[in-house]
Image (tube, rainbow, N blue to C red; front, top):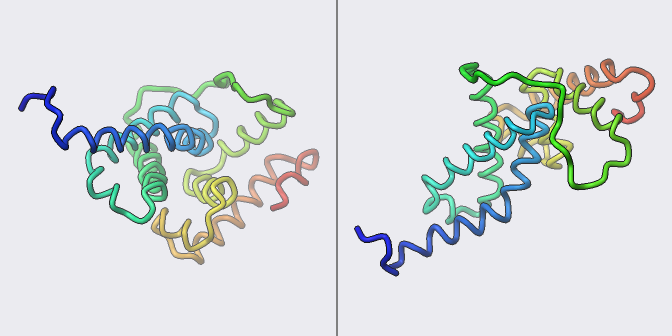
Length: 175
């Protein structure tokens, strides 16, 4: 098929490009938190999730909430990446530079480090519940857990986070 023709085929990729441009940065930020601050892995996961979305964009674009579905695809991509362990990349202590000013870089690094030490499911629950501001039921649907499991994981994860932060930062973990 001639790719230079101006048939209806160009409407679909342009619509996807608009979606990816609007939501891509948000997906990278969410992935950044899920990975515990690994900017490179976050970009890779967001790109992989967008690639999966592109493959089924006709169906996804008709959904009531394509952004929510994109977030679900991202979280599932993150979890499956951690299960594979086939990646040759290693987590480092360096972070990508941020364009936005940060009030307290040491605090941010401390929180990201503590978040990164949590098990992946607990980290995913905290990111979805408190960063993405999803409800218990929405988080349960994304992670394919029961609402009770989400509540108990969130409670345990917050307790672990408070323990890791110590008394100096304990007040910040009071959610």
